Image (cartoon, rainbow over all chains, first blue to last red; front, side, top):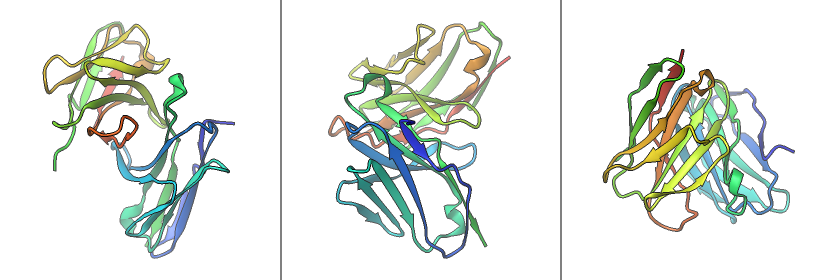
Length: 112
Length: 116
């Protein structure tokens, strides 16, 4: 099983729709989780941290399921500007060689 | 809004040459990182730096790589003898002070390194 796995997509979603991505991780000792977005040929930008109790920031909701070892990102009322690649990032303090792992990302295209 | 800056934006070098990539992290941040992203592939962690020393490094970060914080503002990545496979986008990132595992990282715009 890959350490951090994401559906690469692309997800083609009409504007205004709701879309959700999952990201699975293999190491149960992983402690911190984040979603970043990356536009084409740009740097990753922090979207939100993922807290154990789940958290919301405007149209974005992130959830963590430790038992099943996945995190999710829900985007409501999607905008054209949401088109990007969404990266799942997992931090595992006890695993020295793979402490910070990025997923390959899920590509999202919002269609007008 | 403070941001991480990187220079140059694009560096072309010949195989075997040394390159130094430069970064200016956000001023009150204490944790610094280098990543690379080969075109079309995922972002890969290279090294983290805290309190003037390397705190973690990946297996990619071999003896050809080194990092330095020569003054209070710059953070550099040196590749001693570049190989074709070093061609990638190199991102610098920094994290604010706080819990050691806060890991909310802010990325610079990257330096595209092309080795010919």
